[in-house]
Amino acid sequence: MVDTAGFNARVIEEFRADHGRLGGGFAGAPVLLLHTVGARSGAARVNPMMYLADRGRYLVFASKAGSDRHPDWYYNLLAHPDVRIEVGDVVVAVRAVELAGAERDTAFAEQAARYPGFAGYQRKTRRVIPVVALTPTDEGGAPADRTERTAP
Image: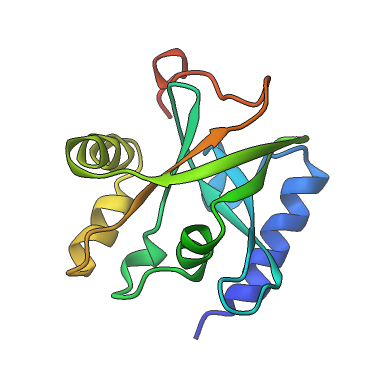
């Protein structure tokens, strides 16, 4: 059994110590720290996750490694969509909105093309993996458009 809390704590520590850069399986990947409030508990939570920069937004993928259940952070965003993220050394206020239809499908296909593990996660589950757009609510917090990024 994987110690998810311990793994996440180590990733968060490395992320903050190295200004948002990570090694290992995340080396070179765009990663942010998502701060949420528990949907039921009201407790503060922090989750590291890969993202895709898209037209001033940060797109995140509720894959939970292909589990048949959505990750807790997804439910937290549904209950409390105004949250913060850490990108490198910057903290950004964002609002979460789930993508639907062709917009969701296009974003997921691009992430799966860049990082094939996401395609594998979708194959492992019957649920459609949600894609959530995190849009900055203040100036200066938007990522470069994906057309400006180099492919990994």
